[in-house]
Length: 143
Image (cartoon, rainbow, N blue to C red; front, side):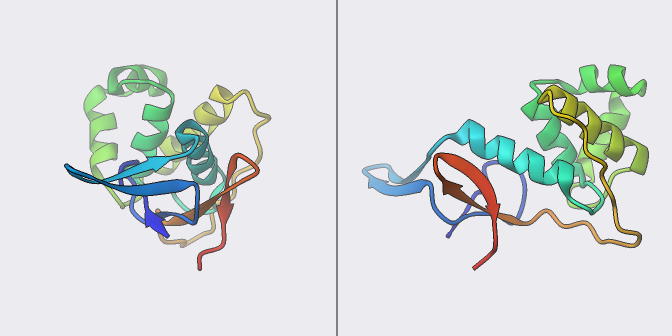
């Protein structure tokens, strides 16, 4: 398995759909359908029953091609508030911001919004494993 760190999240593993090659400049990794992988990661974040982390919030913002100022305007908060939420890293962001970002991303994908349940007392966790099946990235069971 390959740990995909370039997405800015910790614990994202790919079972397949990637190729590791040696070049004169070192090791390089190419990933099939990178856009589809990012969509699968984003959907995993939106559907997770755990609080969203600062890293995940930033990932969803970037997937929507938005800068912090645009998100601050949508949330009607100061841009520094958005920056502070993203700086929380693996720690959870405030509940209303979590739910709002899930809703914004779901709308961004033009999907029917599904109810998101966050388990009371659940700990933040960024990890997930993905596999490429039939040219589409899906969440997979870890090895």
